[in-house]
Amino acid sequence: MRAAGVDALWVSDPANVRAITGFSSGADGKVLVTADGATLYTDARYTVQAQEESRVPQVIARPPETYQDAAERVKGQRVGFEAEHLTVAGLEVLRDHWDAALVPTRGLVEGVRLVKSPQEVQAIREAQALADRVFAEVRPMIRAGARELDVALALETGLRRAGAEVGFDVIVASGPRGAMPHGVASERVIEDGELVTVDFGARLRGYHSDMTRTVAVGTPSEELRRVYNAVLEAEEAAVAAIRPGVKAGELDELARGILERHGLAEAFAHSLGHGVGLNIHEGPGLRKGSEDVLAPGMVVTVEPGAYLPGVGGVRIEDLVLVTDTGYEVLSHSPKERL
Image 1 (cartoon, rainbow, N blue to C red):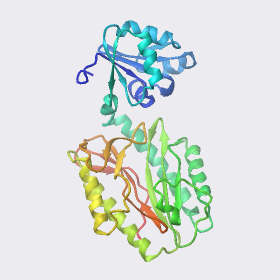
Image 2 (cartoon, rainbow, N blue to C red):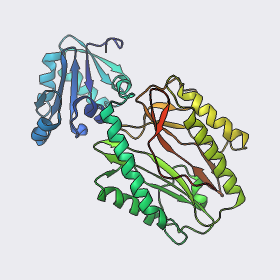
Image 3 (cartoon, rainbow, N blue to C red):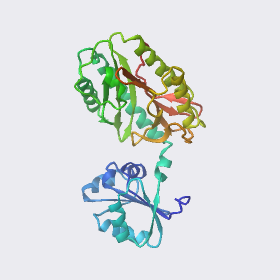
Image 4 (cartoon, rainbow, N blue to C red):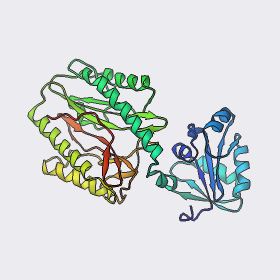
């Protein structure tokens, strides 16, 4: 906050609300952070929940009382707001109620969230272990004659039965649909000789897991096997290069270079990976040109892919913890060798 030139910070992003307070219904809460501490604002629906979950004092009130209470605390100060989350209407409300200079800020709480605490790492670890178990249960049904939707439903049901939430829309993309990086499950029936890309994650106690496996049904063509092995080579090389002090952009460059040598540079249509935590996509960004530097406690994905329109696609993704000396792969579902 000092570096951003503000005396206080009004936090409205749900994940940031939870990160600061522990309050799990962040969409219905706001936090005021000052030099003296933090205060959670929510309404009477959450009185008991806020008392049980929040690590900071709470004010139970609805607008405009919320803003009137905070007004006394911020009078005459420079108050930062989250420019990437607060709406224009929300900003106008603050201007109507506060005698304060409102300053747009970006990434203040997210910067703190880059490195996970041991408790956060454990939550992510448990979410991924749960997802690995569910994938092992569902893997046998990925066969010729099965619908993509049925595979996705089995994964979602397995996650919920195990006590987790579904972290994001489940991707099950078979055959030519594998050329769509975000090919969520459809009614398409899986056929013999195809590759099937499965991307899913659990959300457990607010924290996410993320993993992709591309599996073979029957015997895929020589070209599909070539693409699969190229992506696997890039994925494993990038994972092996993870250690504290490495720039995230260098990992993307490494994986991209391997795919380029295999003639697949144009087929790699997205960044190498991203951080995972309270959000499924957060910092650091493993993308071309990223200056983010890896540090112990960061949890990232490594997920190179190759997508060939009309043919199919491959993506292989592991969830990786940056350790003091290197890395630990948190996703343990087997990667097929074709």
